[in-house]
Amino acid sequence: MAAKKKQNTTVKREVRLRKAKQWLTIYNGTPKKIASHYRKRFHVDILTALQDLQAIGVEFTQEYLDAVKKSEEGRIHQLHLQKEAKQLWDLDFYDDPDNDFAFIAGYTSGGAP
Image (cartoon, rainbow, N blue to C red; front, side):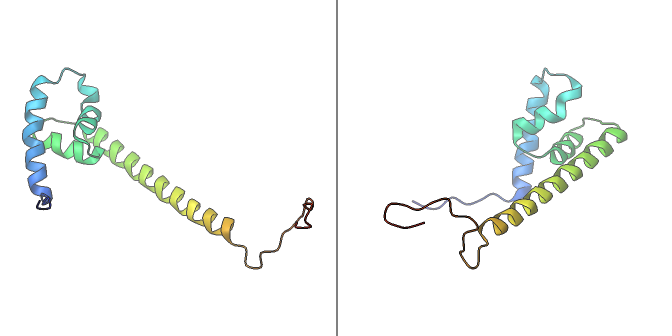
């Protein structure tokens, strides 16, 4: 059986936009939540959802677009900070160069600490 070929991103976007136009005609949610529903429906991030919705004719205020962009940048920054903190914690946790114990609570019956 042949391996699956991946579609390039422009083809995926064209297909997604075509499906989004159909989805928009049957969408019955509030206009306030259209971007978040689109994001969940098509499994894209919020900035891509806004770009796609603008491409098919949905209009957003500039203040809303700026606020979403700023919050997304903050979210990405927080993810980077968490990733760096986890990497530092992993290094510190396993970093024991001389394998000496700081405190031995007791010994087993065979004499091992």
